[in-house]
Amino acid sequence: MTSKTLLIWVHPVPDSYSAALRDAVLSAMAEPPEVIDLYRSGFDAAYLAGGRGQSQNEALLSRHKAQIADAEELLFVYPTWWDGLPAIFKSWLEQMFPDALEHSDSQQQARTVLRNIKRLTAVTTHGSSRWVNFVQGQAGRHILGKSLRSLCANGCQFHWIALYKIDRLSDSQRRNFLQKAAKKISAAA
Amino acid sequence: MSNRSPTPPNQQPLALVVSVGVDDYLQQLAENASQSLQKSGYRVELLDLAATNYAPAMTEADRRAYHTEQSIVDPLVQTQADSVLAAKVLVFVYPVIWGTMPSLLKGWIDRTFVIGVALILVNGKVKRNLTGVNHVVGIAVSSAPVSPAIKSFADQGKRLITRTIPIITKRRAKKHYWHHTRGSSDADFARQVSAALEKL
Image (cartoon, rainbow over all chains, first blue to last red; front, side, top):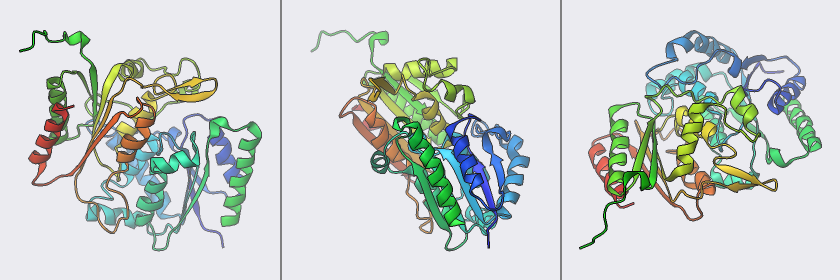
């Protein structure tokens, strides 16, 4: 049985390597998932500045919450920058589930939306090496694999598919990773 | 008694305070940090991202420029990058949101700490470029204790400030990090941080 997947893609450049990674992942999936292209969805990341963005994002976030509530798997494809999520991705989490780690009421609201999510998958790229990222603390991995996962269904699985040292790899090594990521997605289905 | 005259303000070393002042307490902490650093002899630039309508998301133009010689395309980002390059002290004051620094500050780092500012390429190898920075300071405030049910860390931003950013600053630059959870000891924390920064 295949689970219903929502793919969230985060990259500002439409013809980037990240776009190729998204396409490789999509090609490996038996059922075409729903896709949120966060950069081109009209989402405003600058909400903290005097409440700006929050009302503009309201309808969009309601749609995204409905899509999440209807899914069983969230699959994120994004670049890791400065050891963490791109700001727009972090802002999306902050606005979708405000105070979800800090206050029990907010936590409960987040769990209501995420209660059907049984698997989280992150497909990401890093400029630095695996070792450097380990020393830096892997903030991006922790926020998805620990913080977000703690709000999902009991026993929710977390898969981490990551490419390191992307700027120092050859074209063929990058192409190999596209295949490797697709294979892992296919195997996990 | 010393006969030395005070250093003219334009010759004082620069301290850049980057804050996300979403409430009075955080604004006060950033203001206190600025005053303490001025007492220590620094010229201070205070940048409050929450008050300046800062757009944190790296844009398509930002990203396309990232690997080019002109790696910054936004004049506002260029002005702030010039301050980073001139700074001897970098201070980050922020609320902890989702277990780490808020997206506004993360976005500021993503857009400002680019090739040519934070790092340079020498014969294809990445080298540190903020070699004038002697101190990196983090002042983080959580609104409530993180629930034990959430197996997260108090602040992942700490690692960015104390481990990642020192990779690009002067070798053995001093790292200072203070985390506080809002409560009855708010005033004590503000005093302790101010006192510590006055000795910087």
